Length: 176
Image 1 (cartoon, rainbow, N blue to C red):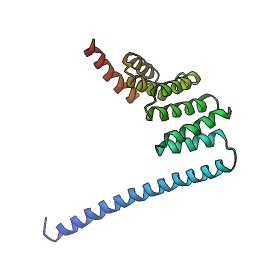
Image 2: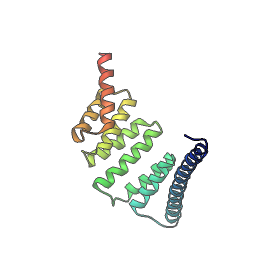
Image 3: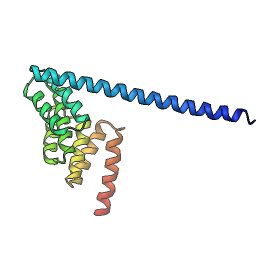
Image 4: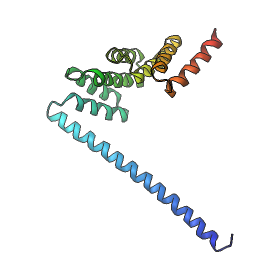
């Protein structure tokens, strides 16, 4: 490589790195603006008037993403109280509320919400995984393994259930 091409190559690489960094930063800024706009819109609307269950769920989900768990739980409870959701939609609300309790280390309340979700939708793999994880935190490895295996029965390629079930099997074999 000649000495004249070397600086051009380095500058080109630097420009590519800067351009890709700028792209990712701009994408994150736009995503954040969209989320903040939705949050602001929903909060102001729901402060003025009663909303739909879907709006309460959407606001709760945004608050969950922002790690405002207690506020998210309040929104999920409002969505449930409206009694307009059913089936998969209601199961998703219970699962999200369980996740919020789990994040606050309130495992018994999380377990209750995940079970409610599974009553409505017994083949809800995400709720099965979440319930299994809550059982793990409660040191109930056998119950957790059973749930992960149930999830794998419904979705054999589920990486979360596969990874957690293997880890639990190893733990149960070494402790036996």
